[in-house]
Length: 338
Image 1 (cartoon, rainbow, N blue to C red):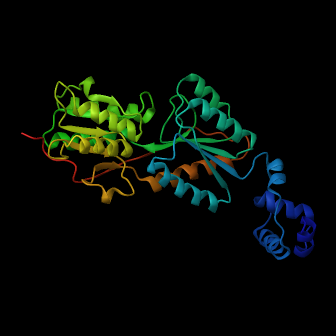
Image 2: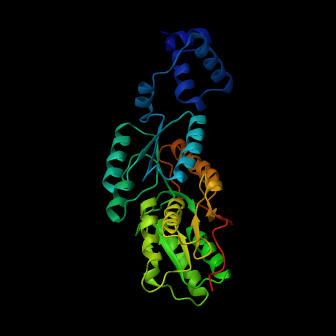
């Protein structure tokens, strides 16, 4: 097995220079780095990642922690983040918490023990205890999608208020006044902001939000299905339109309408936030406010790598990268029935 001594001999440099070229490349000239790299390839030398992590105090490992991977949104994010991390020579480890704050903390403790260089986190935790726990982590952390108020960490996400406001405005312009919201998990940042955009837009048009038309869908298919069933069978009269706070909620709601033989959009209009990879085969195609997933994914890994590569002791204020959604019309909306 080739050793660092073999690389040094072939490259014509000292062992310490080879070590610098491998572990602190900025401290040697580009010519020396290239010569060492060529010698390492020639002799078949591969640096010991465990030894390197001990020297640096961290491994070339990035953890990505999300509530659940069943949502196609996170699948698209994962694909882009894996590619960008690989280009930077980092291994991405992805875990899901099943929306459990306790599981989230256990995973983060484990990643800390593995000397992870940084964390991408879509947290489902809430409150000061969660903020204190995350603030004490020894590695850089970037929040993605969900945001914890009070946590001094970078965040990448969508303008959630704008997303729901666009959809509400679209329905109002079609003539709807009795508009329901199938929201996300109560208390989560995205759910709070999407409900705010919905309510503010209603009020701007002189429509008082009806608490009976706002249902927690828990950000999963079953929640969307249950919420739509409840809304479509209300004894006080069902809404003429529904806004689903996510793509999977929208699909669950559409399934409920199909089972109740309620025509969409003839009897009820339906819109959602985020598209689906198979949206073209869903009938009717759901009108959606779509997030720029690829751009957001590239930004979250860029911010994290900047934090990882920052000199020891370097500090800067938390940054927020907010992306605007765009409205993609489908066939799931129409004026309300007479």
